[in-house]
Amino acid sequence: MKIEDEIKQKNFSSEYHKLSVNLQFTANWLGAIQSKVFRSCGISYQQFNVLRILKGQSPNPSSLILIKERMMDKESNASRLIDKLEKAGLTKRIQCPVNRRKVDITITDEGMELLEKINPEVENLKETFSALSLEEAQVLNQLLDKMRG
Picture 1 (cartoon, rainbow, N blue to C red):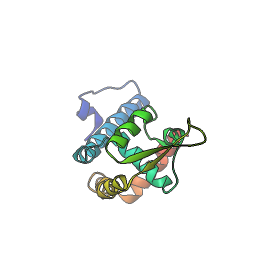
Picture 2: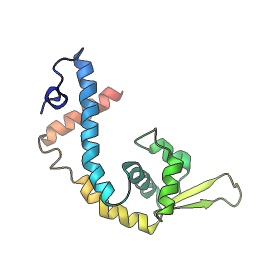
Picture 3: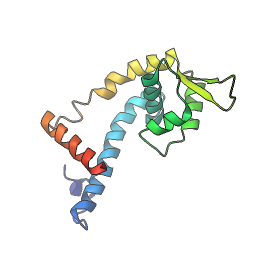
C-alpha cells in the first residue's frame, strides 16, 4: 500500500520528505511485527539486541562500552537493559578483581536458550518481505547502505 494511503496524506514537500516519512513508517511497521515475538518471550527489541551482541562475543565477555557501540538503537540505556536482563537471569556481570570500575558482561545459558527459541521467528521474514524478490531486497539493501554513506 502506498504511504499516501497509509497515513492519509496526499502531498509531501518533496520526494525526499516522502522518503523520510516512508522509511520511518516502514521501520515502525516492521518493529511492530517483531515486537509481537519479543513480547511473547518477555523481552524488548533492545534487550534482544543486547543478547545478540553478547552471543556474538561469547565465550569472551563484553564491556558496557562495546555493547553501546554495537547497539542498533544508539539512544537505548544499555545499563538499564543489562540490569533487566541480569534480573531475568539472561546475563551476568563479573567485576574485575584488579580494577573495580571494570565490569565484564556475559550471556548466560538461559540467555542462549532464549535466543535459540526467538531467532528462527525473527529471522524468518519471508512472509513479511514476500512482496520483494531476492534481487529487489538486494537493491534495497544497497540503496539503504548508500544513503547512510
